[in-house]
Length: 466
Image (cartoon, rainbow, N blue to C red; front, side, top):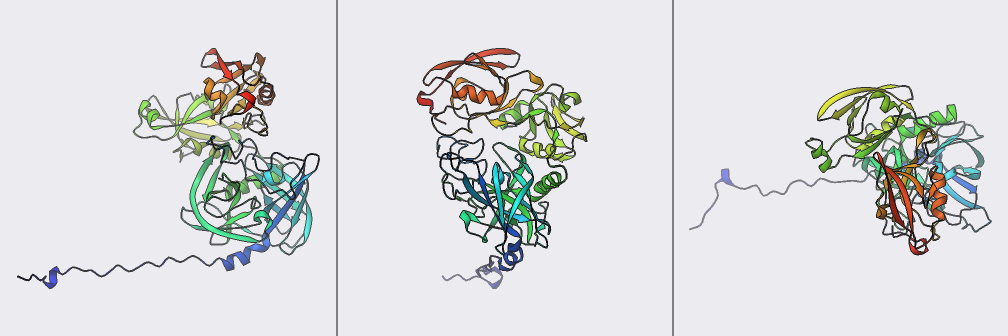
């Protein structure tokens, strides 16, 4: 017997309306802003082995090292390739922020430059001088002798959201006035060795030569400064990173007024709160920044902060990950008072702290990764000088390599290497260069309240597996 549905039970099989997705037309925005984007060409000292390598980072071709794809900064292409005894040339991008010739670019574009030339969109060229440069944020402020120049409009990142359209203008591989577009992939991204910058991650195609160029939103405002890429080939692979405009302009203001940048300082070493650590501290889920160490006589120590405290808020702003805290501290003026919300012994409490000034000597670096890949051994550890002249270096982070294989851990203080006293990070670099290939050498460390010798095995020929 045939079965039919009554009208009340009839199924609606009409296909849903299709949502049309359209890509914005960027032509008017590019035309509006291109005149304020400049090319920055530099002539510098000879660096024949460092063209494709960032400061403090491993060789980009070392596939076994998980940190290798993260360049400190994507470098500028050589024009032509330098050779020993000859100066090198490179180029980047920048943008004009005032009609009287102030220009923002990356620190790494102009670092160690002997001569800087700025080429405008109308093909005029001017020599530029560096007003100030800050390696920690990778921001540099230049000045050219010109007037009546077109300028960009600076925006902010408060309303920037993942998924929004953004576009860049720059000179990748020297191809001037190149525009590329994409979306915001992530916000507040933390990268190895970049403590004070919560990067904007995008999929905007960025390549060498885009360094220092602007990242715009659909309102035509600068929301970021292109600075780094993730790559195993030296070219774009879908991951680009920009310095947020509000972070950059705070640095620019200090460089213009003072010639240098001051940052707040707590004096603590931080550790990520993993799931296992969260359980051990009685937390329902991982959150906050775990204090691994407190520097003696630091603002944190004076405020009563202790190792094992978990910081969950800074000045009322939530701290979800350990990477959230350093940028907030760094942008706080020294001498300011801030309230920290912490978890100690399973209980929440507030601690008031008066910030100090980040010491100039408190420069952390990947202690033996900024040497050429010429057979020189390296430890692959992130270290900082021990303050107050006590000597030794404190290990901040350990990557794959002979130090990790010997048992070196974050928080260890390296006291001597091959029976030679370690005075600071710079001297440690020199000691490692003299290690005998294929031999085992003693490494004396301080851990917790005791001292311990570790046997460091130097690879034959100095080559490192990671």
